[in-house]
Length: 435
Image (tube, rainbow, N blue to C red):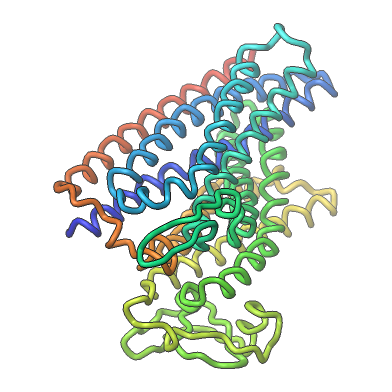
């Protein structure tokens, strides 16, 4: 493995691991706030137990997310120094604001964790909301920085020199809104299904049925609601990509030839050498409509992009198909779930329904990871789209392969620690509920 590939794999592994905890930090505080609100409204102590248990889970994930996020910030400088040399002054603002949001989140979480019976009840509940709101803004600021990499703005560039820096323009680049919107709802969908699936496992096992039933209903309210909105946010994001990054769209759809009335490709395996897609379902004109709102509009194919600027088509296309497929699966489940509620029949009272919720536990996060593969791999070979290639930003530091192995070992150990802590926390939840 050469240095460039090792550095990219290390960054991908670190980001893929961190993004799970970042999304949990954005969504789960709202779950615990809803649980506390229901306790305040009903006086049902099972909601209080649930809120306290979830808050401890949020604290665990917050701490782990802080550590992995810090490591990512160091990796940017260590692995890609040329990128940070130029990008640092331009996108420093969203990173600084992310730090501010992080500190607000930490303070509010401290109040929520240690403020039981010490501050007024509604003030305590409000602190939980602040945790969630700060987490969402923290995610938005980071995504704004990533959006800048996909849609550079806020500077002048001549002969390799970055000048006339405009931080506000850089932060509010053309990609930030569509990416942040899609990412935020993806966080709620993935976390909602994961939390519901975890509680469904213990519901199947017959442990503390009442509290797990209530937990699943809260989690699915967020997860299913977000899943229904994902096609809308995804459409906004796809239209933005079509306008800004035609090469990425072409790779996502394995669209090799520029044409009008372009077909939408569902599934299939791209054959890059022959510029075809095997085993695919094609819907004529649908790609033109989805990208430009017109069935006859021309969609740029990879034949209009220089070959040395082609993204990895196979990986990007397959990741995009996985993301869309799993998103459709979550939405399909949501239809069944709501239909049974409308018929006054709870899916959660059926063993097959509980098992279905459990089987869907990883689906949201798998879709999320696939989406980030599309975002990052689809931008290649650029680290700053159209300005700087990834290979030109690489550190000259030797031994990147060894740091990659070290990162894998550290994260593997952290994963085992998290599993142990969460199992212990669920055991405490059952003990507290049975008292």
